[in-house]
Image 1 (spheres, rainbow, N blue to C red):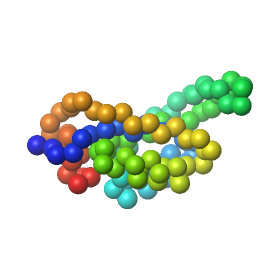
Image 2: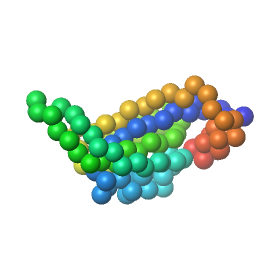
Image 3: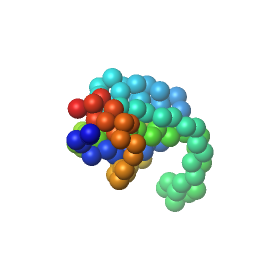
Length: 105
């Protein structure tokens, strides 16, 4: 059985820094897993529609890590306004959630 509330944290970043960012957050035990996917992002910046090739990090962790994880990402990230979103997990495979709990605990 797991004891902590699992969450997903989403963050887009330049592809060149994604692996290092994920590795640092794993080594510092802020996250238990970081999946990386290449994406094309379109967004409004300074009133213009922009497009960028980025990497989306999908990180699995627990809610108690959220405040310090959010700040750590902001410290490490090269963007002025990085995307850093936390999504609650309402349920999942019990063995996966137990593993997540054991890695972050």
